[in-house]
Image (cartoon, rainbow, N blue to C red; front, side, top):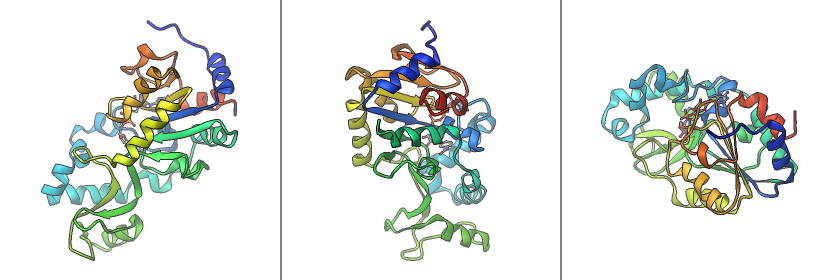
Length: 253
Ligand code: NAD
C-alpha cells in the first residue's frame, strides 16, 4: 500500500514543476452536475444497458439506439453545466505558465469554458457541442440538430447526404483521431509532472499517458475517489473531492 502523500507535498511539487500535464476524466465534472460512467453514481453503474448508446456498432445498426441517443443528448446536463472549482484551478495553472497541456477525455467543453485555451486543451474523445455526419463528414453546431429533434424528428439525418448524424465524440468501437492522440502522448512524454484527475484510467490508449510520463521520468499524481490500476506507479494518490482538493494542490484555494 502506497503511503498517503499530503496535499502540501503535492502542492510543493506542482509549484516547482515547469511542465505540468493534466489528464482529466469524467470525475472532474461530477461536481458540475454531469455524472461519470463508472463511479458509484455513474450512468453505467446505475443503468448498465446505457453502455449500448456509447457503442458505434449499436448506434449505426439500430435506429432505436439512435433515437435513445438523441433523447439523451437533448437532456444532457452539459447544456446547463458551469465549470466548478476544479476546472477553474486548472485554468489558473495555465495562466501561471506551468500547464503545458490538458489532455481530457471529457466531451463537455467545460475546460474551455473555465478559461483554458484551445492550444493547451487536447480533447481526445471529441466534443458534444459539434455534430458530424458519419457518411460525408459534414460538421455543424449540435444545437441546430437538436432543434430538429425538438421539432419532432427522432433520428435526424444529414441534410447534405442523408447519412447518419451523431455528436463529434469518439464512441466505443470508433477510431481515435491519430494526430490528436499522438499530440496527447507527446505531451505526456515531455511532462515533468503528470496530474491524472477524475479518471478511472480504464480507457485506452489515453490511460497510457500515465506509464509514458512515468517512463520519461515525470512525477505522477493521481486524484480520484476510487483506486486505479496505476496507483502503484504514482508518487502520490489523493482520494478526496476533486473540486475541494484540486484548488489546494494548484495553489489557487
Ligand atoms: P469514469 O467514469 O470511468 O471514471 C471517473 C472516476 O472519477 C471514477 O473512478 C470516480 O470514482 C471518480 N470521481 C467522480 N467524481 C469524483 C469527485 N468529485 N472527486 C473525486 N473523484 C471522483 O470516467 P473516465 O475515466 O473519464 O472514462 C469515461 C469515458 O466517459 C471517457 O472517455 C469520457 O469521454 C466519457 N464521459 C465524459 C463525461 C464528461 O464529458 N463530463 C461524462 C461521462 C463520461
